[in-house]
Length: 250
Image (cartoon, rainbow, N blue to C red; front, top):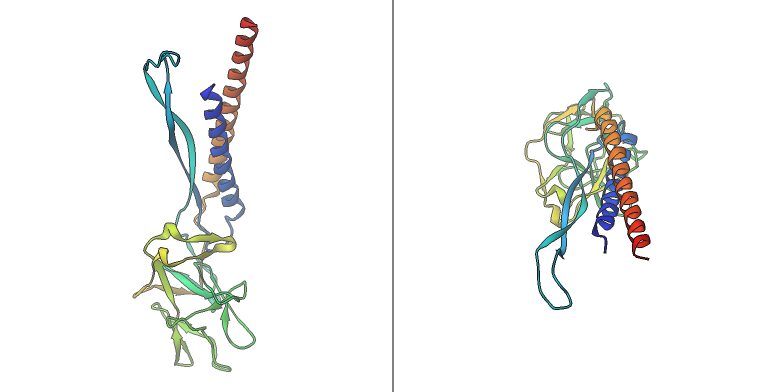
């Protein structure tokens, strides 16, 4: 068995996953609150390859591990730059934490994209219509004719001097367990260990940009192309060597 062929094929599969992540980063670079996808490359041991043993006699010889390239997805939670919008319902978190949302099915979601709007019933919702929750886990509802909301740095919401509530900001103790959805939305179960951020820092009239650097992603795309071509050539060369070997002994 030509282990090199399988190793190169495994490497090409890992590179394809890397390419998928980079492509998603490039297309989502302008999405508010988007977090960059990363792919870590490693090797997995699939056993030992006997180099000079004799299977017929049972004699063992030198061996080497059969290492196959593997890739693993992860997410970079580094904060993006907070850009001013001067819009009363735009909010950005400085530091750790996510805005808490309630989906139509009643489940909880999280986001760093604080581009909100007011529903007909005066409930604060995000761009997908998910309800924005307060620190008690209830939807934030503004009062009619209460004027524009004023949100303090600690998330406290006021209208005409009256306290409406406080934005619910939570952060995971195990962010690797969060599940990423499109448009900067995340899901988290108990394994993520979501906890209330006691002292959040909110900026009203700002939105957090994605943490994607398009130039870096383009450089990665070039590296991906070269690595893929190199493994293609390795497979072609090994295939030619096998063909010549068969011709010699046929």
